[in-house]
Each structure stands twice: as C-alpha cells, then as structure tokens.
Length: 105
Image 1 (cartoon, helix red, strand yellow):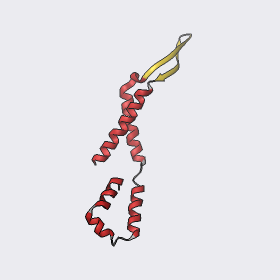
Image 2: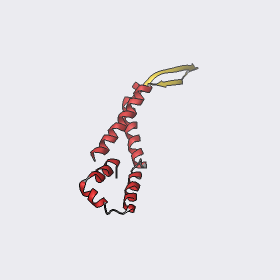
Image 3: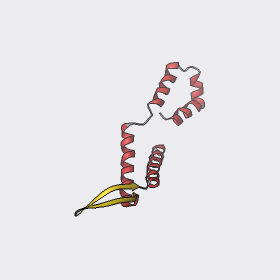
C-alpha cells in the first residue's frame, strides 16, 4: 500500500463510517503495509538496468577529458574524467521515469 492509497482510504466517507468501529490492530496493519512499500531489490535492479542502458547509449559522450602516455609501443590511459552533469542527468531521468511508471500502475 502506498502513502496515497492509505490517505485515500482514510479520507473516503465509507471508511470514516467504518473507522468508528475499526479495531486498532487493523490501523496498525495498514501502517505496517505502508512501511513495507519501500525500495525492494527488484526495484533497485530495474533502476540500475535503466541507468546502465542510458549510460551505454551515450558512450564516449560521457568522457570529458582523458590523459594518455606512451611507453615504447604501447599507449596507456592514465586518467579519465567523466562529464558529471551528464551522468547526473541520466540517473535523474532514469529515476523519474521509473517513478512515473510506478504511479501509472
């Protein structure tokens, strides 16, 4: 049960009439349901997959700067700097999209 569902339930006139005779244990169960509505491992996996997909689609556009060095015939990547703003936008977008999908269900 989501917070909004609990509020809707408590605000409905039918529930108000029932609440006059509502046992306390039932209200406690509603609150427990609300608490268990948090982030689940499945939700984390879905969000992580969305973020990974977006990061992969941007590819090299995420790289702001890099340093290379030569060692005989080898080129070494010494450091890489990512575009933090782009990464942040991707993460925010993935989270917002996920939350919108959840609200639609």
